[in-house]
Length: 468
Image 1: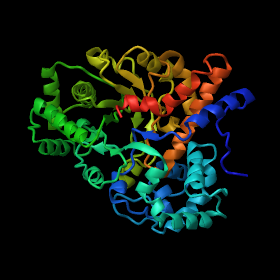
Image 2: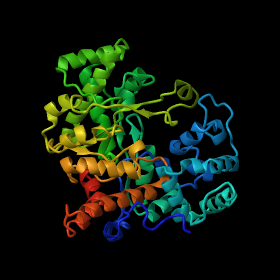
Image 3: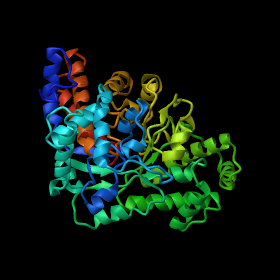
Image 4: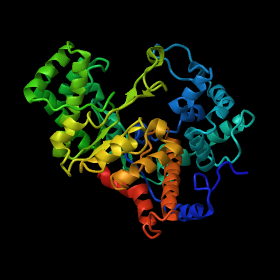
């Protein structure tokens, strides 16, 4: 029996399933538009082979190793590097066998769907992945990785990717993007301006980061206006290299719109390291509004990813650093938190602010009503712990009736795992076609309307929202 069911994620009733099949047939081979993610631009600049199966599928993927860690497998035994350079497993086959031994733990998760899809469609392995087949899988993937057709650029082309956005620090020199642009390769890999390190007073070495920002921009960061000008300069630099968006990962969705004199005073306290926790949070909120104003000037789309308590385990953060599976969702307020920004610029249709959430209780109560009226707001797809078939379905059920489809931005994969990109888009396309089929079958949508909506959800809305 094939690992991948052709009708996976489609409705169970025959009428809905038939409609979903027809809709999916029209969108399954459309290009992949990936406007937000965390793949490494160096892969495409150097176009070297991926190191080995373990470092392709296990070591960088916090979706995978967090589950195994929850059941007692040490991160060191999965090859996850320690900050202090301490010993970790370096034998990729040993890591792979531990991964296989814990693969059953991923049953019912989106990671299982993504991995099964990658094994079958990227590497042509149709058998189930088990401890007994682990070495066969390893050998097959290792053999493939040595072939030119499995280099990053070749896979980009085979996956049908139209554009791929990375996420890059405001302090990044974008050397890999420059190398890609000068290589003659026709793939489109663009940066995204991520200024968290220079707008969050709680970031490591915040003062040093801001000083570096000033050096790169040639601006005097000792003044509030000089600091803002430094951001404008760096945003322009990113735009010159193809960026169409900025991205902001804040603890909350809080925004502020302080008088400029008060903002300047707050900045001085933040820069001096004397700001309270409340003032640091207010500064982050003020900077979201300032970034929205800058977006009105330069056209960058503003993405807000709030609501994650980063590094919930201080021990894991100290030993392994960030992005090790311990970023945990929390309750998030949008209605009150966003009002200062929306009062300032929210009625401007030329501004695009894309809202993400890790708190699905806000889908129908807050996010859909906001996006359903403010011309500047769009809803990003379910993110992180909600980027699952059920999370995507709930999002459509709870947001569509108030925000409609056209106040959303389609799908983005938000991944570091390159080989999961086509799998994630396949899941999103199937879930959206299933939801459209349900609307058609229940008489809420005309059958002739559904194909255009399926195409919009697959590629059109992302192209439009991200100005691609």
